[in-house]
Length: 157
Image 1 (cartoon, rainbow, N blue to C red):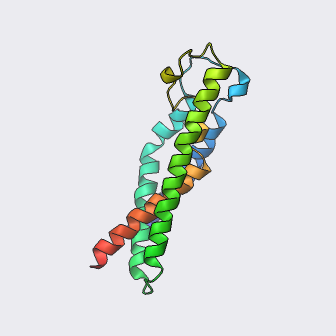
Image 2 (cartoon, rainbow, N blue to C red):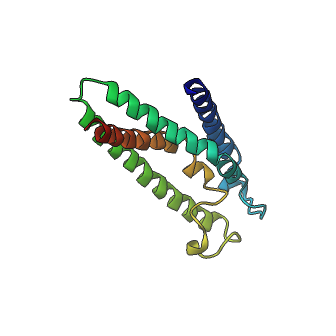
Image 3 (cartoon, rainbow, N blue to C red):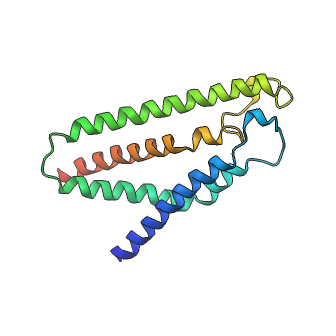
C-alpha cells in the first residue's frame, strides 16, 4: 500500500507541475490587447487537476511530518519553521500586490475591457500567471512545511 501511495504522490507531483506550466501557458498577456469572452482557460487545469493537487499538498505535509519526527537534532527546527512561514507570507503579499498591479494595468491599457477598476476581478485570464506560478508553488511548499512542522510538534509530544 505504501508503494501505491508513493507512486500516486509522484504522479500528483508531476500533475501539479503540469498544472503550473499549463496555467502559465494559457494566461493572456495584457499587451496582446485581447479582451475576449471565452472564459478563463488557464484556470480550467487548476479546477480539473484539483484532486491531484490536493493529494500532492496532503502528501507533502504527511511526508514532511514523518521526516521531521525522525530527526533527532531539533535546534534548527524552530528557526526553519519561522523563516518558512515568513517567506510564504511574503510571497503571498507579493502575489496579491502583483495582482493589483496587473488590474491597474488592465484598466489603463484595455479601457474597453472594464471601465471601472473595482469591477475587474483579481483572478482573471490575465492574472493566472500571477496566482499560479513557480513562486506561489514554492509558497505552497513552504506552507506545507509549516503545517508539517506543527503536526510533527503535536505528534511528538
